[in-house]
Length: 245
Image 1 (cartoon, rainbow, N blue to C red):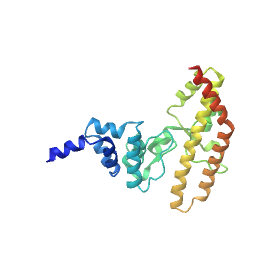
Image 2: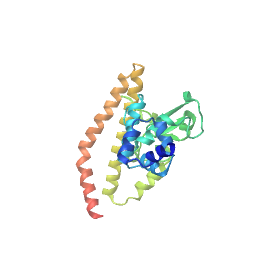
Image 3: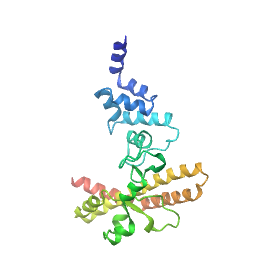
């Protein structure tokens, strides 16, 4: 009988498998993905709409504190794993939850010493690295901007800075470089809006949300205005280079 039940699960039609999995907890989905290659394919394929639907349903049903959608460029499985399934700093393995948090602007889980080692201030980037303002506008930074914040308080993610700069400098055509910059700037703004939404949710619990909501709304306004100003230009450049390929 056990063998028959096991066989029925393994040979279950994909649509029925998806519906069944939606009622499982994230930790159960992780366990199920380790049973065999077929299940792993259903649950862990990066660009699969079925996989996304399973993890999204599980999150919304089983994780009441994780109702916001994933940040930009992150799938549902990675989102649940980072927010709920992983423990401790991913760099030094510090386990004390009081000293570890998720930095959504960089999509990492870290303790304070490790995040400080892996970030750099805007002043250092400009002075010591001669990093341009144009490139800085394409990079996410630590913390939601306040209404009157100084850019000197921002900290940027060190890993990848050289690669980003090299990628930018390697683009010789000025219009292609402009397209790269505009896309990255829009993406950075979307990430910071997501950070603002999460900060608002946390602040609501402490009844201190007014200033953070105003800051988040300021970014949303900037994003809408920026999209209005450059949206047509981005579409025009994308069409131009798509036709050239």
